[in-house]
Length: 630
Image 1 (cartoon, rainbow, N blue to C red):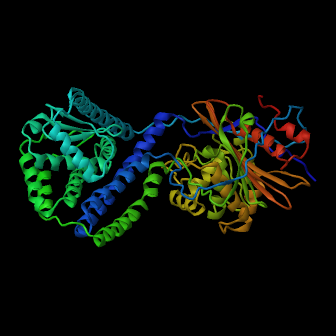
Image 2: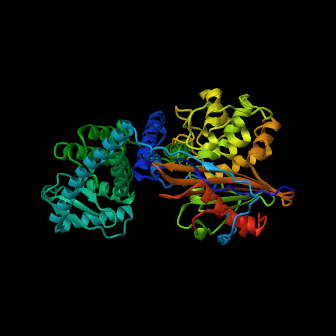
Image 3: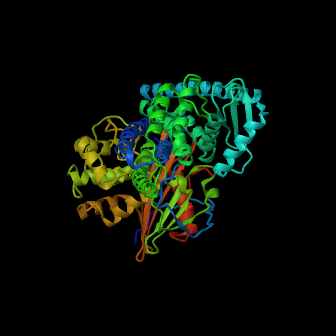
């Protein structure tokens, strides 16, 4: 039986581009997707506001206020760590500490057929002007908002620093009565200050209530009791903590008018909820007096509110809404509370079901949502084999239905596929009729190319072996943009993006795929889950077959990303086909230089040999490393 080397040997390197690791480009990409999230949030805010208006008479004031918390959660979704909404990602690990060691180098085997890994260099991706402008404006706005918030915090700090412990025994007695009435046992300090016009509570870990001196000097027991009850309700419902959250949301979404509207409504409904909580414990005869307290304060309250505090005051329009609410207040019944909870829960579930959409919109082009639940996944320790490169290795064992991974996080990271995509580009050409299994010949157009092997007529086997760019670009040119897009969608290839340049879409950061997706696609390719013509699948398999022995057959394709003359990304994907089993693998390495498909193949050889999946002979494995720097 003919015996050939089952891994490609690097004479030259076929190099395209890899995921740009620049943090700035990552931030620019995120800012773009964040803007998309901001658009998606608009109908959610409209839905929430419409629901609250429609069911206003069926929801308590506290429930209407708390519904805004669902929006705050949704607004935080784009900033959650990657994987937060992989709700089914409950792996069942069977840890393995397999470490691949590289065998020693020996002389080459003369009878081996070499597979070339040719390439050209491309330029680093540059951000668009729109991306840069949006990011700059967004950051500038957050900076300005941060400065304003800091000034407000500094002012609040000065107020707290100038405040003195409450001295009035009568006010202290009223405060203690209010605490007992609400069942609050914690000792909350009360201070007096000349820098406030209305009472407020500030601080989360160490909250304190601050009273204006004029309020103490113009002492009115009933009004003071109402105001203290109101501030203590803020304490009971942890409104200060929510206030911090609202402030941070306002900084990040400073440019979004609907978010600004929602935060304004939330602050007003927070005060209305506290008003209702106070009225709930008062006698009905006290309602009018409580309303008069707000009216009396309308002329005294400050129009400036502290973002880190909760005050009884507010704007004139807010005071008007609160007074109208007091005028129409009726105590809550158990039935209404239960009905409100059910309605609120239904809306909350509906809105939260949109969370994965926002999360995916923020990270759609970067990560693959691998469903780990119910899968047998073990971890490999290949840090020595990777020799300082970042990246990942994924292996799938068909017979045991098990996955083995090194660096699972990177294994789900989508990067440019480089020449590994040519496996599927060849299928595209065969399925679209550009080439056929029997007639895949293309004549060289007589143009000069950087490699001698490219300056010759090609068929599918030679084009795949020498990774001839112009051959596959000719397939794409005849297939046209719409056909390529439809093909990518049909086979569900990575992010399915091809940009506008048909000669560069698999090399210009448009098309991206993760190592895990490479494995899943190889399985579909091997089993022809695409329902393509069997002879077309067989033709591509033959083109990527690297070795056939009595053990079985070995299939694979390299890809390398060269950016600005440096090899920054290396791929090696394929599968080992034996009589009793099929093993699929995908290796990806990334680095500042030297990260090639050939190096990824060397790592793969070491891993598969250590795992006793494929070891044709010691000499054959050693030959993989001939010509590689150690």
